[in-house]
Length: 229
Length: 114
Image (cartoon, rainbow over all chains, first blue to last red; front, top):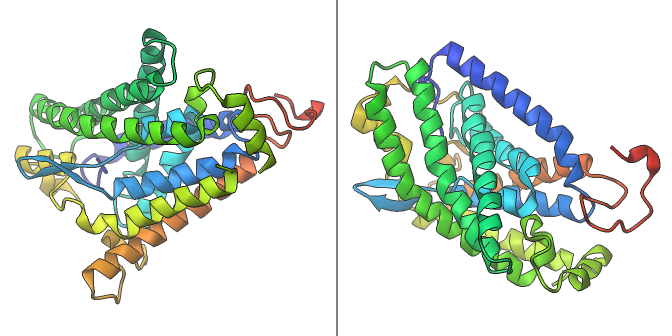
């Protein structure tokens, strides 16, 4: 969903730049509560893993593909504030080094994937966790639910931005329908990857999954081991 | 699995996904590109700015072999993300050993509490 330069006009790109700067600024302060000697390296790994995951485009039919956005995944693993920073770093590396996503569109991409993706993905994760039975197996399911909703949510916000400041004269409803339709399908892929990765990490190191706190059985034993490592 | 081993295993997976797996990824346009093409605003995009990076478009300048070129760019991207992200998180981390509700490993420094 990387928006290139030119899709949105300058005022809209400046506005999303301000939103992105405010979001990242807040995340920089709040992430501190989620990061310590043990979780900071894990957060770096999560950012690197999301970069790798975003390279794997999976086909979704009719000559279209999608790839992981990673907002819900990162939020469940390392907490929402740190997740915003993880996705922002990924987008920065992609924009600066890979020519993926425009530079004037960096604020737009951070807004869509690092802010909307994380806020919606994590919000739905918490809601789903509250509804599902209280056992470890519910965590990957709730993470998948968050992931599923986060993708069409980001696509909807792009469509809204396009309606406000798109440089091409296209009916906004047409863009919204197509964007949400395709990204619902891509969201299924996002949900599957997120659910599988979260359950794999829970299987080996439940204490490193921030969203699984209070859910994983062998938590205290593994935590004392983790602190000593 | 101890911390260091878990982190190394995770990094190895990320490097394999980006360095090897990415070759097998779908080359179809992604959802946004596809919609832009279908609804007719794909031409409103500008050429990407040349930042002088040797890894533009996930290929490595001067490496002709497609598999190697893409794989190297993927590995470079993972390592750049790890260094920038990991460095940022290491600087931001709390030094009293407590993140949220984890029991502190050492007594928290009172001046550090916020």
